[in-house]
Each structure stands twice: as structure tokens, then as C-alpha cells.
Image 1 (cartoon, rainbow, N blue to C red):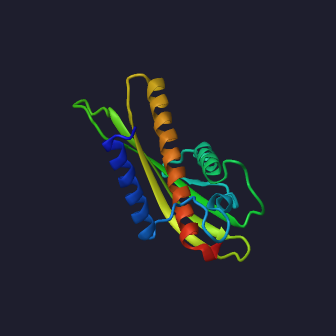
Image 2 (image 1 turned 120 degrees about the vertical axis):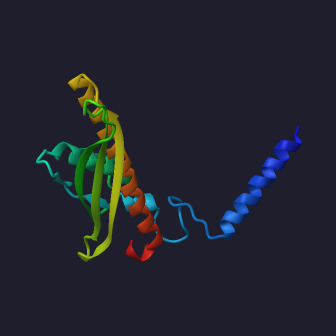
Image 3 (image 1 turned 90 degrees about the vertical axis):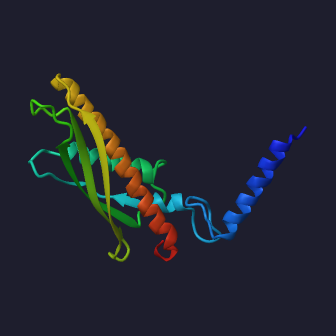
Length: 183
């Protein structure tokens, strides 16, 4: 038996769906009438080695590898499909800044910041299609135990890498969806 609340909720859902279609809303990963599915197109993006830069001389090779893997998981979770027609080049930079400082001048909290610049290239023409920047900030506690602080920093870095990878994937997906002539 239909209650009045369920009936009204169903009507509201139908109206909302109808108005979204009327305003030009198209789902990002949905199939369009022409061309391939966006997830197929994203799986044709080759990810180049992530270049790492740091101001204090630390080696970020592992962080670059983690971002590379996060991008692989986000762009082609089922592996590449077909010929690779795009290449994504990424440069990564990391910084850590102290936030909370006690009277003894010891920091108790820090922000880990990852910034990246990236370029999407068309491998067929060599043309730069899209250039963008992305930034992720994650905080962690600085504790009395050095090991605990290192683990907190590692957790913050892992969160920032996931966020950065998701943001880059979303920007690339939006670009390719809004520029179907580039596919």
C-alpha cells in the first residue's frame, strides 16, 4: 500500500530527474549518444613517470610512485583498453609546515602539502591538450615518539596522495567529457 509520503517522494524524484535533463545535465561517466564511454577514453591515458621536486633535498621517488599508482587505479582500474592515445605528465612537490607551537617552541601539529602540475598530451599529434594544477593538504600530529610521528606523517601523505590522484583524474575526465573533439 502506498503511503502519502512515499507517493510524494516518488513524484519529487521524477520532477527532479526531469528538470536535470532539461537544464543540460549529463552524467560524467554515462554513455552519450555518440562516441565511446568516458571510462574507455580514460583507460587510454598513459601515465608518464612522476617527476619529483623538493626544496630541502629529500627524495620523493616513493611519493611519486604512489601518485603514479593512484592515477593508474583511477584512470584505468581494469587496465588499459586499446591503444594509448594520451600521455599524462605530472610534476610533484611536497612541503611540510608547522602549525601549532607550544610555549617551549616545539611544534605539535603540521600540515603536509602536495602540489602538482600536470599536462595531458595527444600522442598522435604531440599537441598539449590540457594543463592544470592540483593541491592536497593533510594534517598530522607531531608526537613525543619519533616513530609515532613518522607513522602519522605517512598517513597524512597517503591521504594527500589519494586526494591528489582523485582531483587530477576528475579534471582530466571533465576536460575529455567537455571536449569530445579531443577524443
